[in-house]
Structure formats: C-alpha cells, structure tokens
Image (cartoon, rainbow, N blue to C red; front, side, top):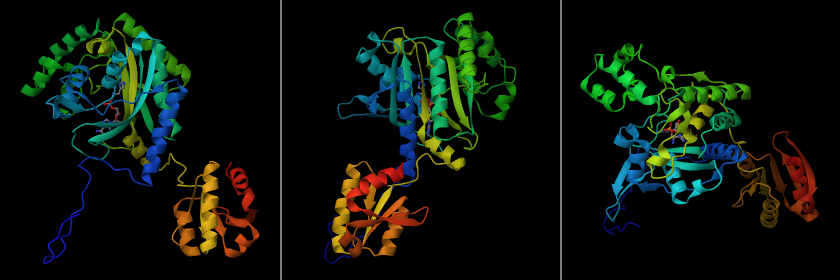
Length: 431
Ligand code: HAM
C-alpha cells in the first residue's frame, strides 16, 4: 500500500517486469510447459530413474571444481554472491555437479550400482538473452552413476531420443562423438596444441589453446574456422578401450533404431566429459539449436572427493523443446484446461451445479464451471475458452427433473443425463 498525501493526486505505480532473460510461462503456454516436463519425467521413470530434488544454490567451489574453471559457464556466467554469513554461493548453472555432490554426501554410491536419478527444474546462467537463450533455463536431466558400461550410454541416449519423440518432435538430429579417456586424451591434447600454435591466432585464442585447446575448435569466427579444417580430431586418437566403448554404443544404437550422425568436432560447454558425448540439435530454432545434450564423465566423482566411479547423463532443455514444438506446430498437451464445464442458469441451478462439479472432481474428472451468474452466451464462451469437450447445461426445468443437458462441444450434439448418473456417463464419454 502506498501512503498518499490527501492534497496530492494518487501516484501511478509502474508495474514490475520479470528480470531480463527470465521467461514466465503463463497459461496457455504453461500447459505445454507442464506437459513437456511431465512427459520427460515419465520416460525417465519408465527407464528406472528415481527423482532427486536438489538445492537451487550450492557452495561456489562445487561448480568451479566440477564444471571447470576455464568453461564459459564458470568463468563468465555464474550467479555468484556472498550470503549474509559471507559464504560464496552460486545459483546452480547445471545439474550434474549437484547430483554428484548429493550422491557422495548420502553414500548412494555405496549401494546398488548404477545409481539412476532424474531431476527437473530451473538453472541459471548469465548469458546474453536471445530467443531460446535464457538466464533462467529449465531442464529435465538424468544421471546413471557408478558403472562404465557402454550399454548404459546407449540407454541414456535412447531415453533422450524417446523423450523428444514422445512429445511429438521429429525435426531434430542426434550428434555423437567420443572424447576419449585419460589414456588417449593427453596425447591428443598435445597434438592439437602443436597444431593450434602453428596457426595465426590472436593472443586470447592462443591463451585458450594453452588452457583448453578443445574449446578453440568451437570458435565461431570464420577466419578461425578456416584455419581449423585440418585440425587433428579426437576420434582419430582414441585408445583401444575408448574405441571399443564407442563402437559398442553406436552398435547398440543402430540395433535400437536410434538414428545419429557422428560429429567429431563437437565441443561441449562443460569440462567433465570423457568418452561418449552427444547433442540433440533442432533445425527450426535458429542459433540456439541445442535442445539437449550430455555424455559420460569418468573423473567427476573423484574430482569432487568421491570414489573413482564413472557416470553418464543428459540435460534436456524444456524451454527449447517448447520452441521446437512451436516450430513444428505441435502441442504436447491436449490443449484443454478441463474436460467438462458447467453452465448453470439461475441461482438454484448454480448451487446444484457447484455440488455436481465437486462430485465430478472427486470422481477424477477435470471439471470447472461458470461463476458470477453469467448468461448462457457468456458461460458457453467460458466452456470454449477452457477447451472443454463437454458443457453441462442446467436450467430451472432440467433441475426440476433432476437432469442435466450434456452438450458435446466438438460434435455439437446434446442429450439429457440424470444427475445421479452424471459422473459415470461422463467417464464413459471421456474414454
Ligand atoms: P548443457 O548442454 O549445458 O548440459 O545443457 C543442456 C540443455 O539445456 C541444452 O541442450 C539446452 O537445451 C538447455 N540450455 C542450456 N543453456 C540454456 C539457456 N541459456 N537457455 C535455454 N536453454 C538452455 C548440461 O547442463 C549438463 N549438465 C547435461 C548433462 C547431464 N551431462 C551429463 N549429465
């Protein structure tokens, strides 16, 4: 409440907006948002992944150590602040490090392996906002921890593929590569650095080549890309065991009918990846085309103070999946707020309708009604806006007979149903 001096005119208060780059999902889009997230989570449950709910902020060191100091995510994009006790905390920029911290903290890795967990929620990256790139982004992710079995890589990749297909998307591709392990990576890194230092690169890029040469392959500038045509590629330097691992993964994906292309130049934005890495790319999204990605991480758990155990997982971008649905002109939800909408004419009918609608909800039927004594036309508009399949029309005469008119809003037909049979009748009609 704003105190206003009686001699002054009331001050007009400027409404607030959401922070820059932070999307709201309001109806009807929130319906799609929820449908996508639920569908992804449902697929994860089908594959035996259990829910894990993690803090939105963690000790800053967890991400610095887990994700890698030289990544853009850690060096430029974290929301880091000191809390009132002068501890440095960070809004989580991704989910894998937090899952690993919790697995170690709660000794989940001392039980049955692999530990299979899934999560959903917001993540925070201070990126330059644009279409499909937000500062608060939403992911559904899974992690399978503790077993270095290529069959798990195939499971995780096939699961991500099924998530996207399950919401109706078709215009995406899966790119795959292997980043090798700690036996072959150092040699490759040396070869790549030798190559990069022989090029005509600016000071900053040379510095990057020194700390994280792989990242130079991701440089988008044409004058750099031109020079990278003959760069050595990790896939040509894989150790025997990494090669075998990768061949088993691709062989399984072939057998499962999961299509992919090999992209030996893939560079992921997080440093923990080893061996299998993958990205799902949608062609209808413009620059921010990555709708999901993941990979295996051999050293992460040990790096965070846990056992030497490997893991693999993915993060699917819910915001971008929504944009992809829009680009393909598809819906993930059934487009309905409720299935049944009550339209009552007159006070007594409105009272009875409130009781009937409550009964329908108890019977598990999505139901709402028109409030505020609106006339037939206005109330029917409400039924339409709710996307209802059936309107229940109750006037004084129907009420006197203990009946209601059930109006099919797609077929434009109607019939009378006794109030006492209403839930049963509607359940049949809605099947
Ligand atoms: P990521 O590739 O950084 O991986 O993010 C996964 C997905 O989140 C991206 O493919 C994209 O769809 C979405 N995303 C990322 N940044 C933004 C943004 N600024 N705006 C909108 N969407 C965004 C990870 O985060 C890893 N933790 C995935 C993982 C799990 N790897 C192994 N396990």
